[in-house]
Image 1: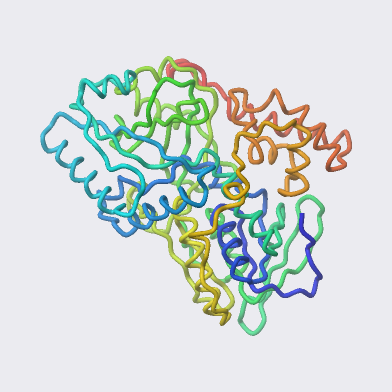
Image 2: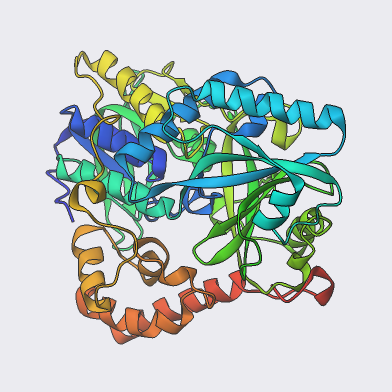
Length: 487
C-alpha cells in the first residue's frame, strides 16, 4: 500500500513485528510525527494476536499473585479501548461461580471487591452476587451442585483482535508510516557498536534491502529471541514461550464463565464468541516455531476434562475447530501460569529498544512507554495522544460485520490493508475463516477474486487454495470419540 521509499532513507524508528504491540507502536510513533517503518515477517496480526482468548480484561486471576500493578494497568486500558474502539471492543458480562465453602465464597467476594476498586474509573457496572436460583436461570448448562450462586461482573471482549491490529497499522500508515509485510529481518546493520538498521528479505518477491533507522525496536513477541540473535549479539534468552489453545464449539452456554479446571485448578473460560462457545485456554511451555503452534490431542483432552465436570454439555457439543497461539512472557522460573504477564522495555544496546512480554489488553500502554523511550533518545518532545484519539473504524462508523460483496472487500483488503494471500483475507481481513467450515466454502471464490487484484497465475491461485485447505484441515482435525464429538 505504501511506497518503500528511497534506499538511502533513514527512518526515525524501524519497528520489527506486526502484532498488536508493534502496530500500536507504529501508530503512536507516527501520530507523534516520527518517520516510521514497520517490518513484519508474515501478515499483520497473524501471530500471538490472532491466537488470543479475545478478551480485554484486567485479569482477575492475577489478584491471587498480588500483581496489582498489572491488573490496574489493564483495567485502565480496558476503559480506554472501550472508548477509542467501541466498534471492536464491547462489554461482556461474566459469571464466576461461588463455591459452597465459607472461605471459598469470602475469598472470591474479596477478589471481586478488589477488582471493582482497581477499576475505580470504569464505566462498566460493579459486580453483584446472584443466588443459586438466579444462576440456574442465567446459565442452565452449568452443573451447580458445587456452587452457592455466582458473582456477575463485567470485562470486555475484542471479537477480532486481528482487526484491532490492522486498524492501528492503517492509522499509522495514514500518518506517514510504511508497512512492509512478508518481510523478514536477516541481520542488523552495526556502525560504531550501534544498531543503525536491518537487512531484510521479502518472502514474496525475494528482494533484499537495507532499512536504516535512528532507532530499531524489537517488538516481535514470541519470535523475540530469534530476532535478537540476529541483531543484538551476543544475546541470552529473555523470553519464555507458552502455548494456549482454544476450541470453537457449537453454542451450549449463554454467558461467559470463569471456572477452575477440574484437572489442575487453573482458570479456564467458556465464552460466547462469534456464534460459538469459545473454550480456552492451555498454558504450556513451547519450544518450537510459534508460527507452527497447533492444538494436540492432549491439549483437547485437557480442555474437555477441565470443563466437563461443571459443563457436561461440552462432551456432546460439536467441536468445530481449534486454534493455537504462543505467548511471549518475560523469562522467569516457576509454573507457566504463575509467570507474570507484565512487560519489560530494555534500552541497554545502543540504537535498540527491546519489548518483552505483555498482554493484548495492555498493548496501547506498552506502545506509549516504548515511544516515550524512543522520543527521549531522539530528543523529540512529543506527547502521546492514542488514549484519546479514536481508531479509524470508530471515527468512520465501521464495524467488523462486513456485508459488502466479496469483490469489494477484496479490493479494499489488497489496495489498502496489505492483503497478500488467501489466508490473509479469510482469517484477518474478514471473519469468513471463522465459519464452522473454517472458510473452506469461500476459498475458491476468494482466491479467484484475489487473482484478479494481485495478478496471480492460475498455478499461484491453485497453490493458495491448497495451502489454505491444508491449514483448515489441520484446525478441523478429528480425535477419538472419548474426547467428545469429533474436533
